[in-house]
Image 1 (cartoon, rainbow, N blue to C red):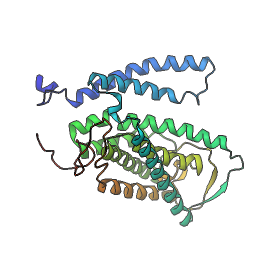
Image 2 (image 1 turned 45 degrees about the vertical axis):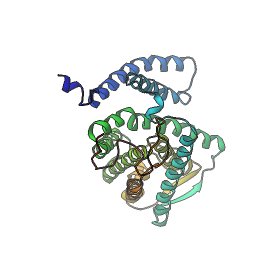
Image 3 (image 1 turned 30 degrees about the vertical axis):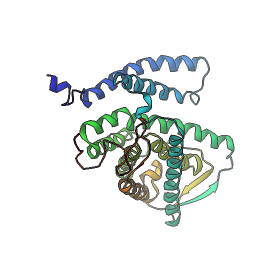
Length: 308
């Protein structure tokens, strides 16, 4: 029985930590609904409630980290100067990815753009507000406590594949997923999740994955005006899809259901796979990393870890 609960080092096995997280999360959802409804009855709009799910998820993560006798920062939220630099780097990376997809689509004759007559700084700021909370919520949920326990228990490659499959499955009910869009959007979401998982593995921080996720979504919807995962967005520009197959344009789902997005994400995955990470930098839990090692102790993708 003890071996079922604990590993050879006497630590609670990762699977039990994941079940504990799920239990605490379910309790938080029981509390979330009346809080959300109460705030709406007080006149708080749904737009201003976007941070609320993040607050609840942070609370769930904090409870689980405290039970492990770790600080919340150790999940990848050490908000120091390095964290913010990684965030900005991630935003730049995600923006560049989406601009590359849009440029390829434009060159292939799949889209034309015109400025939205209703554009304004307020609309642009609203996009920043929305996608900030969407990216933070999804990264906490899919690259936070649970993903990190999967890496502990299964190793990095298996955890990346499993988390990629879960992330793709979570988007299966989105609008516009039919025909070729279903296959390509699922593949791209899976690759995107692997990319974001690698971003955490290579830095030990959630800053880079949050930044990449935000930059991709904001440029896609808030600036270029594409649908994001099947959901309509008001952007600075208005894209008009031309007479090309959905596998090229992404159709109603948006560029993420195009072969161009799959290529962009596959190239980014390869880039991060080959990157050795934040060598010589401080990890999110404050401990230094040796210069000749990848950034995270769980890591060395596909290689056995040395025993002390």
